[in-house]
Image (cartoon, rainbow, N blue to C red; front, side, top):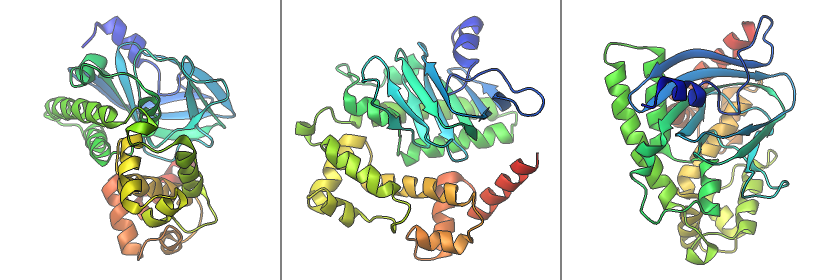
Amino acid sequence: MAQEADRERDAGRGSEALPPAPGPGGRRGLEIDAEMTLAHAHVMIASLYHPGPDRNQFRRDRVYWVDLCLTPRRPNADARFADHWSAARFTKLGSLIALPPRKRIELRSAGGRHVSLLCQVQASEVERWLPDDFEWTERRLEASLNLANDTIKSLMLRLNEELKQPSASSAGLGDAIVAQLAIELARHLAAASAEDDKGGLASWRLRLIDERIADPDAVYPTVTELASLCRLSTRQFSRAFRASRGCGIAEYLAQTRIDAAKRKLYTSAPIAQIAVSLGFASQSSFTAAFRRLTGTTPDQFRKRIAAGRKR
């Protein structure tokens, strides 16, 4: 691990240029619920609160800042790479992101509260697994802001469990999880293609996909529908999507559907109704998918929301 002073500088703030911890009454800030220092990473569960719209600059030079939202992200949370993209170009943040080192990032949201698991992995631990000719292309920058990767998510959830229920073996297990996390993150980023002519989807097609998935009034899309929307065969579409986003379309749809489910669980809609609205065959299949990607059931997730509101 870096020197303690460096760790404090790199680890002392949260995923969106976090402000100081909140004072009485829940003012703007960050509250650390649990944390653990490992050989090559610092991990913490953090509650973030901003009473209104906010906009911040973020940069870390020594770590990959991996952030898994345990609750839905705050409304309109998005980001841009300030040294690469125009002032008008922002990309919506996914539930799992990995902010790369040495990049200046501008983050903004409409305010509100969310809880994240933050894992700051030493940059050298990830970059040792990247290919020698690795470059931060447009595709890879975009991919870092929305990691639809079940393996990385599962590893983060394992870290979350160790933080919530620590034991004498937690540090050793945490080190092993971080080592695998670094490898999987490097693989995911390396797999993101550089240009459309290398098999990826054109930007207009990616925009159509995101807009269709985000449509709150339509039944959740299928792979066949999205392929048709992009005017491609299902096989062409699936191959090109993986080249663009670094993950399979089925994996991506599964994750975004669960993100949508989290937002709906903040309402009073019955769980069975939520399952139908998201295209699940039954409430039990919805519960199984939700548990696989979050480590909890929809009912348990809703109870945590209610408990948080009573605090």
